[in-house]
Length: 177
Image (tube, rainbow, N blue to C red; front, side):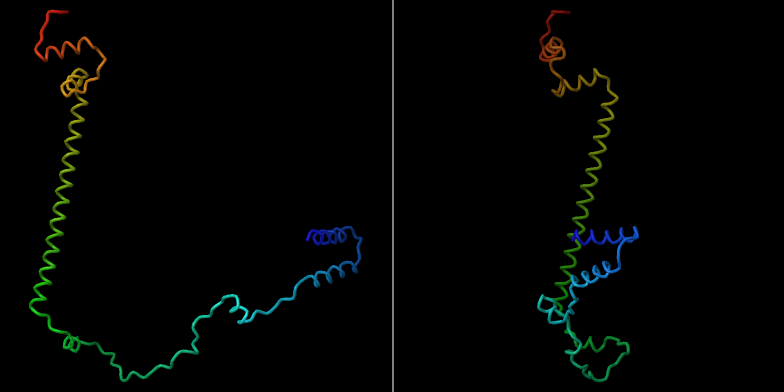
């Protein structure tokens, strides 16, 4: 392949330089024609051998059959109604019961979903109000609330915390007053 390109470009260079002969170009053309493979025609058998499958043929279709006289007018449905079986009273009652129970269950589910959504909205609102209330409190008020709920940060002022705890139990000393 590389030689082919070299000869191809060499011929171009020869053409540019002015040196070169027509016999060389004819020889190259003959070589190219010899190296090229002749194109082979592809047949249906070749395609089938490698797995090609054709679709259905119109040659194998049946001829249309005469279906008798056709009526293309609109129908009022009376003929079909005569062919239907009459629904019994028991079947009607079952159908009505199934429809009613289904509607009731759907309504109960929808009501429960609404109640749940309302409860969630109310909880969110209360939580938001509580957070806003906490924001308005001063630092001392926040600390008092934390102490009351048992969430105070320990280790801040040990002596004051112990005095408060003792007072809450009822121990009052005159120490450090």
